[in-house]
Image (cartoon, rainbow, N blue to C red; front, side, top):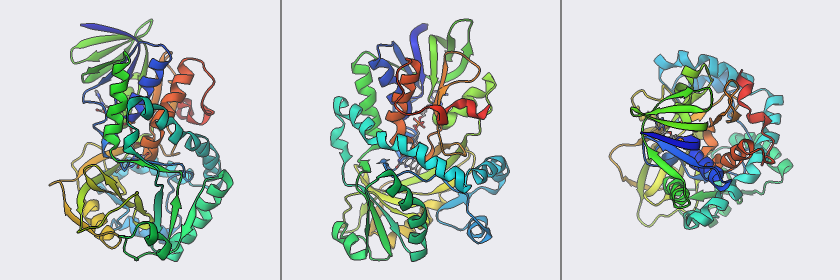
Length: 416
Ligand SMILES: Cc1cc2nc3c(=O)[nH]c(=O)nc-3n(C[C@H](O)[C@H](O)[C@H](O)COP(=O)(O)OP(=O)(O)OC[C@H]3O[C@@H](n4cnc5c(N)ncnc54)[C@H](O)[C@@H]3O)c2cc1C
């Protein structure tokens, strides 16, 4: 079998599905390919936050005192596999360079341009796809257990939020309990970001967008992608012993993008930051109406269709090595101090990998060495938020339209 398309979009996570929909809306013949049904990997397992306030990149711990707890591998927020750590060394060194104050300031300006678009870009797809009912306009709460933790946010995040005009409210314990009455008063302050939205099932949102793509003439092929072969004109994609021919190809394979592009000569600094989730029944009558993140411990609880979803911070390990759910146990214990979780809903936690570049920016744009090949991956901690806006931007670039935001900071050529 040889399938043909103007454009093949590889990967049906939130980024690939959104990209495919935007290209379809511009009149292209689009074939979306994934070995699984749409939205079943990382785009299923995340916390479902659509963040307006993501203005600070991931930072390397500053100073020995901050680094020491991570080195001991005992924090709730981060965990590592010792045998894999050497492989992360160049990436961590680059993260350290990207944590310099001037780089962090530049990041805030770049991130704000896209963060302004993320909520609007989701609703532009959610309305026609019939997924609006999965969205909540309740904002999210960033909780700080200690005055020191809050002072850090005041210095870094709130200064940038003020400069960007992002709405927020600093709440003391009583004011926080007035809007989330089942939280335990075991914290110092909370910040409510009301413009940030969240969803009750990121997997279902992605599926709804994919169904809308198919209902409007897009094609979906459920196959393992084995190879991308550049031809004199266009590309041949090996899918399970068969081939697809496309004039152009967009790679949206999340963490798998690095391995898929290596045979074409691209060695990209894309690292997996693994994370876990598990659903719990609420204890007794306890309820939650928005995501609540325990900043010092990097874990979060949010109400989902399947129960209260607890998500963890970061695990540094190869994305395909076996799960070690140390962090879910630590996060569960920490979160029980803030919210009365009941029994777990599933026997084992879910695990997935955030696809992360060390400058906390995705690669969105043309591949440096192959005409007609495009990248849209590496959205890190913000991929569910950014998927629809990143799909819009990529479609702008493919169709030579006015770009949604300045694409230069996202250019894949920055790694050449
Ligand atoms: C615990 C956790 C919490 C998070 N919380 C948030 C949050 O609240 N908000 C936010 O914005 N982001 C969050 N993220 C990040 C977000 O989930 C990711 O950035 C995003 O889902 C990446 O989407 P994607 O489409 O690039 O990748 P994916 O969803 O992983 O999709 C990639 C697709 O490629 C397919 N694929 C791979 N290889 C092949 C192959 N060889 N053949 C065929 N198909 C293939 C896979 O099957 C998959 O469907 C979180 C992540 C984690 C782990």
